[in-house]
Each structure stands twice: as structure tokens, then as C-alpha cells.
Length: 280
Image (cartoon, helix red, strand yellow):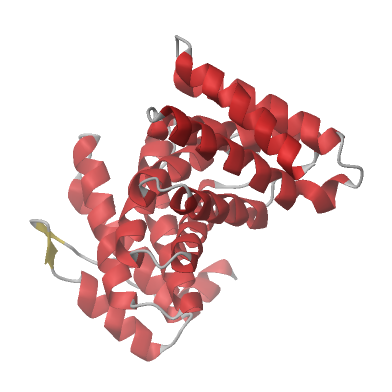
């Protein structure tokens, strides 16, 4: 089934890229259809979701690489299409979101595509794709960035650069659907730190990269860069609180400074205990 699904996806997406019209919308339709058909033919659907998602991602990126254009639009569209197709047949969990982004990053590296572009567009696509699901914006943003970090770690890529791209994409996705961009910034920064801790990466560099991504996105969207930077920095420190006091200090020192011309102010309290107290 794997090779067949990859081939069907590749053929469908190549036709989309070579055709005319909106590449994003047409890629959504093509990948949604392939995903639905593959899952319906998979037998025990729930257990086959990761495999089918991987096959559709691989086929999509092979198509984009073959034609040599429209990478960003294809990645964004395929991510949305895969999510929509999956939810028609099974369920899309946060774990599936993490796996989808991780696989997209790894597959992009395998075919020689730019991982930064892929991370940003996949993040944007996931946020847009999950707006109608029982997954809130913050959780989706966490899953996006964590998946991106895990994916790039597996191919020896730049963790900080990937964090920057993932946060930027999450914010752009939130803006597109009318969501809270600061919530997206905070969630994506948390996910980036979570993933970095899992793979033993440099928390300080990744935290700074996350804030840089928030500033970039805010400026591109004509939003207040200080608010986006503050949200990302606060989210990064909150995630570091789950690691330990030393991690909090490391991350706080990295982000409570002026970054790309923006003075970053952290909104406290950010300690884990404070969040738990608020929840109760």
C-alpha cells in the first residue's frame, strides 16, 4: 500500500503544480482525496494513520521536488488536505500532528528541499487545518513546533532555525484563521523547547530562535512585534520550567534582552507551580 499511495499522491500533486489556478486549494483537494482512499482501504484504520500520513507526505514532496516549484504552497496545502482527509475517516490527535510535521521535515531533507521553508509552511498548514477540530490553537502550536524540532533533529539540521520557522508559520496560520497570534507564539515556543529538551539540544539558541520567528511574523503581518516576542519568550520559559530551574535561567537569560531591535519583556508568573495554581 505504501508505494501505491506515494505514487498516487505524487501523480496527483504533479498534475496540480503543472496545472493552473490556486495551488494551495488544489493540493488540499488532491491530498485529502488520496488520504481518505488510503485510510478506507487500510483495514484497521486507527493503526494505519501514521503510515498513510507518511506515504502522502513522501508522495507530495517527491512531486514538489520533481517539478521544482511551488514548494511552500504544496506543503501548506498538503498538510491541510492530510488533516481534512484523516478526520473524515479517523481522528486527528496531537500525537498525529507531531508525527505529521516530523515526517514532513524528514522527507523534505531526504529529497533535498529547504527545511526552513517546509517547517514554516507545514506549521501554517497545521494551524489552519486544525481550526475545525477538537484541538485548541495552543495545543496545535505546541505540537507543530515539537514535531518540527524532532524532525530536524533526526536529519542533523539547525534546531534554532527550525524553531524560528515553526513559530513564524504558527503565527501566520493563526492570523489566517482569525486566531490569537500571541497564543500561537507562546504555544509554538513551548513546543520548540519541549522538543529541544527531548533531543538534548541547546535550549538558549532555540528559545532565541523562537522569539526571532515571532518578531519576523509580527512584522510581516503588521502586528505589534513586542507582543509577539513577549508571548514567545514567556512560552519558552514556561516550557523550561518543566525541565528545571537551571533550564529556566538558561532560557530566561537568552530571551530577556533586545532581539532584532525589539526589547523582550517576559510576562510573569511563568513557573509551573503558578500555572497549576491557576488551573485549580
